[in-house]
Amino acid sequence: SVFLSAADQEQTLTDIFKFLIILEAPSFESTAKRKKFVKHTTRFFVQKGKMYKCLPDRPPLLVIFDPDKRLSILTGAHE
Image (cartoon, rainbow, N blue to C red; front, side, top):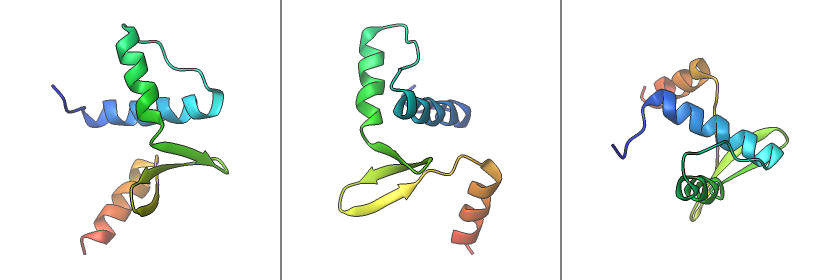
């Protein structure tokens, strides 16, 4: 499947954050998957301990790792 589960998405974001901090990619079963991961990380950057996602023609988005805080933001946006 092309779509990742929520847990896999969480793990991917955590892996990206770690990669951007220590510049060491997690282990992958193939070189192609490793290259895809590294390419995907170029959409993100870390500044003052926080990770942001770059979007074309828009300000960067702060990545919220805390599930409770993320749910609170989503709930507030839909009220």
